[in-house]
Length: 289
Image (cartoon, rainbow, N blue to C red; front, side):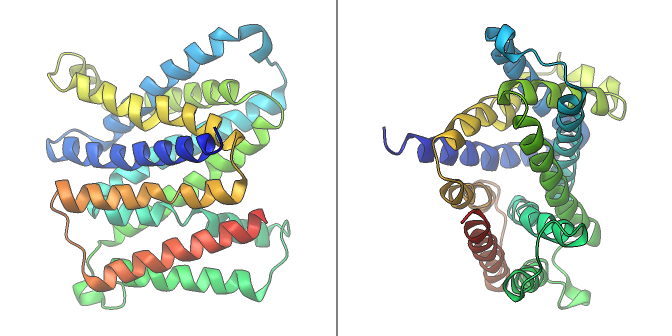
């Protein structure tokens, strides 16, 4: 089908947006964001490992460089999930999801720093535009009545920076090995990292809790199924189209928060969100072109 790739990318982005809302519900029930993040990644790892085993001979790679990039991607996704959920806890699903999508700006600034990419007025204009959007979205223009706490803003931006790290690692590793192998190694590293910092007692209590099925659903929707269909969809979609369609995630997260969780956004916050998403979309299209 002509639009199969677009539909798959859009579906994956919607799943990611919904996962933020699900996580917010469980944090309201006093589940630790780190534990929620761990289960999202651990359940995802099971999906990727099964996908890997199905084509074991073609997927087996021993190149150190491949594993280095994959582990780097795992570190990025571990930080991304964790900071994203912490940002949701400190602000709202809509604000956290939008701040996370500032990732391309971090990629751009890092590229400037290491002289990977040439600096232009257009690119710096995008950076300034996103900063303006962040100020409006978070209420930072009026420190006395700021709508999002400093920690919430920092966590949201850290989630974006971590997302950029994952993309960077995944891109380089995928140039060497298959996506399912990259995801398997990355999420195995993810599990090893988080298992050392989570509350193991609380994590084990999930298994005997009535909420265990919701944790499994979060992992399946927020990592397992979504990442697999995203990878398949990206292969069948132009980079510019995929970049634009992926913006469905913060929109879905915002709608979930407003319609189901009762989050409220002022007009100026909506304006800030629109500035960020439009700027990132334009930048992504320009970069891919």
